[in-house]
Image 1 (tube, one colour):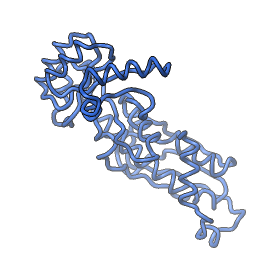
Image 2 (image 1 turned 135 degrees about the horizontal axis):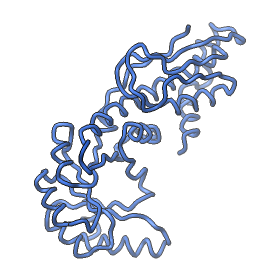
Image 3 (image 1 turned 90 degrees about the vertical axis):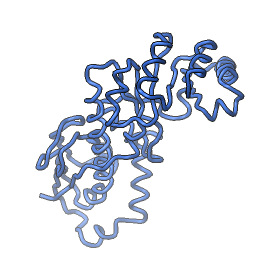
Image 4 (image 1 turned 180 degrees about the horizontal axis):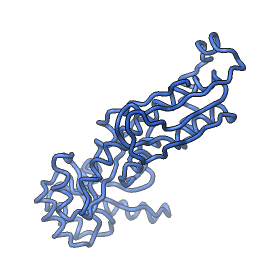
Length: 277
């Protein structure tokens, strides 16, 4: 799903057979203005999406952006103004706010965690723990906040997790089958393998033919030990039970990436509003 498809589906969900409140109370030819106001401190995200929503609702809107995605914002700031048909402004209002509030909340939390990594080699990764049909916006928000987008879906990478390993008959079998599959289908996808203990890491090192080793639910000291064992032969990623309280400890192990589902599934939206003026 691309951004335009998402916007069209979201508008169809909201409008149904018509915005009857606006249709009944606002003259069809009324021209008005509104501005998007910040009510909470954080990192702004979703301006690009808001502009796309306004363009989809009414190509004749005049949108003046005053603050760009990624900027620090505080209460009282004006992000943008929009002018045009009053009914159409009201039609676009909720979708713009829903997207920008959630995206800004995600970007704000992401930036807080990214700041904790400063001075280390580790980079923060997002995950597929996203809201169905809203992933495109949530992934955009984590990137604005300073994280690195991991795979977007099941189709752009092979990530062999514990259930795959168990179903396939072991790590070596899962890796071998993946390599054969890529050759037979002519696809060029990275292969990442989740490991749960030292023995599994050693097996991956023996088998090879992969790109990334995911170290799941290791302690910081366990990660440090595995990073030394892997010794740069493969990219390393840490995950599982990592939050702002222990993120720095994991980052200081020398691991390349740290993934966090909390970037998108445990975030409070940032307070914004669209007001006539």
